[in-house]
View 1 (cartoon, rainbow, N blue to C red):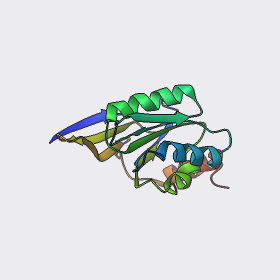
View 2: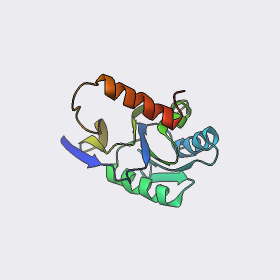
View 3: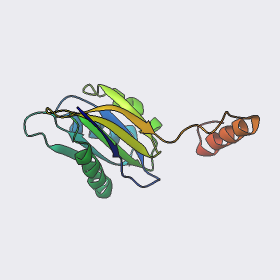
Length: 160
């Protein structure tokens, strides 16, 4: 077995959801879940098929995000892994819809941070061992940090 680290390539403003599902219609069902969760959502998604032709399947509403999702999924090439890239929406807006898709087994991360995926590769294929989401902690939140966090959430519309 060999461990590999694959960095997800994406612009800073793009959010992502990385997970694992188990059926060829995952792409269609995830597309429907995303499109109905947020009207007008811009996304690209790709899914690594794990049997048969073992293709990267893709869909979405934004051609550039679809292309980027396909590129990243191909780099991962890990069985049944899916990647969703979001523009103008946050994972929190769609995460429950994604998790409610019958084929979805797990969500590894939902983030706008830089993400590295730790893969194990054997003679059979590749599997996700875990993810590195963002950076190391730099300290413990102070009272001023708390006020800043609350102000940010208020500006984003998540707190009143």
